[in-house]
Amino acid sequence: MTIRLLLADDQALVRQALGTLLDLEDDFEVVAQVGRGDEVVGAALEHRPDVALLDIEMPGLDGLAAAAVLAEQAPECRVVVLTTFGRAGYLRRAMEAGAVGFVVKDAPAEALGDAIRRVMAGERVVDPALAVATLAAGESPLTARERDVLIAARGGGSVAEIAGSLYLSEGTVRNYLSGAIAKTGARNRMGAVRVAEDRGWL
Image (tube, rainbow, N blue to C red; front, side):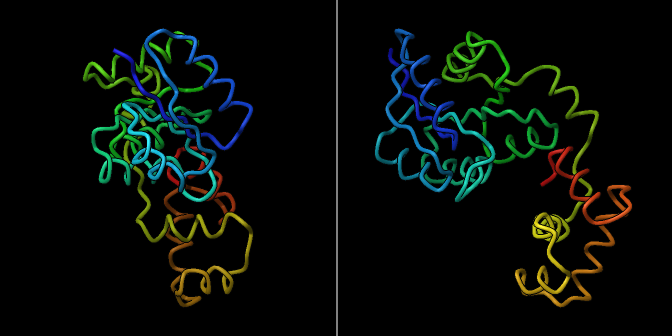
């Protein structure tokens, strides 16, 4: 049986090299490649892959959000997150979004092929060390709104700019920032952003 693959990665060189590598396997066929998260679902509906390999950080829509939409619109397509960022929070969010595999890009090439075959056999495939780290880290303490505010704060904008982008009052934004800073143990909002990014909460 040939396993049909969709690759989604915003780095063209990485995506094309991965496609070439996977096409060398007798039982794999790369049927589509996209460089943006908001192109994933359309490509999946058009090409009907068995497995979608999704990077996390992509323009348009991140891989975790794309995985959630795929689970709704193309549930027969199994999602494997393939990322540089082996963060505990990302793994938890990937599984919540419906992914059945999570592989870091520095894994050996044969590990990726093995992961694809195993998810096709109905297994969940997760790097063991990352699974342990995820259990140890626990769930994100941030509320959905605190997360939104920290994401908006990434660019270093003022409280007024953040408030305007999220349609919130400045006082409300300050409250959410204060809560996020306290929960991350940071000294300021950019420190809170860094902590939350490192733990995969954003």
